[in-house]
Image 1 (tube, one colour):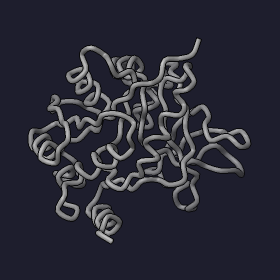
Image 2 (cartoon, helix red, strand yellow; image 1 turned 180 degrees about the vertical axis):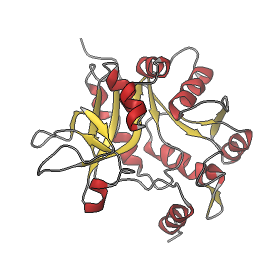
Image 3 (spheres, rainbow, N blue to C red; image 1 turned 135 degrees about the vertical axis):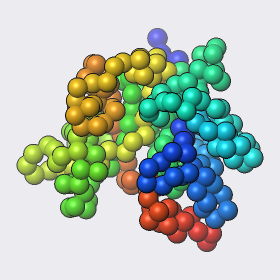
Length: 249
């Protein structure tokens, strides 16, 4: 018996209260709010309907003015996962969508093919959550605690494998590739609901990495190897880089 085809929805969490770049979702990039750039990239991926899960009404207005769909969520959510879980519950109480792709709202230059790639591990029914990694090529990233490392071992010729751990230190030891974890997650709907109901994990708190909560509770995360790390906009300097990258040709 073959598995039923996946029916994904893409959800983009967004909130105005960023410490390093306040009002980040509405930051102007060539006359268009950043959240709208992210929404457009997600639409271009063509994997399913795209929903912005917004903490504030001004984000909803910006997305709707661009022709997109947005839903207002509680401003009190601690994580983007909690925010998208609420948004998907609101727009799909009948549970038509069985997969939720969580695209961070600060990735205005993300390649749509990367979003599509995140669905590949779910061809295996044992996988709960899929994510993305890219091989680290810049030496300083190996030791930078802000670059999260995924501990994965790709068999020869394979681009999908199980994620064993995530950490801010350089791991594993000795010679060999290290992998930069890209914080895009594709959840089976039931896995997302289970994940947001779990208490904070011991290792999650220690490393300050939300995905460890899933591993600590026996959930399976598989990773897809992609070629580039999308630019995450966290600071005014990042925003300037995004403006340069998205400048009209």
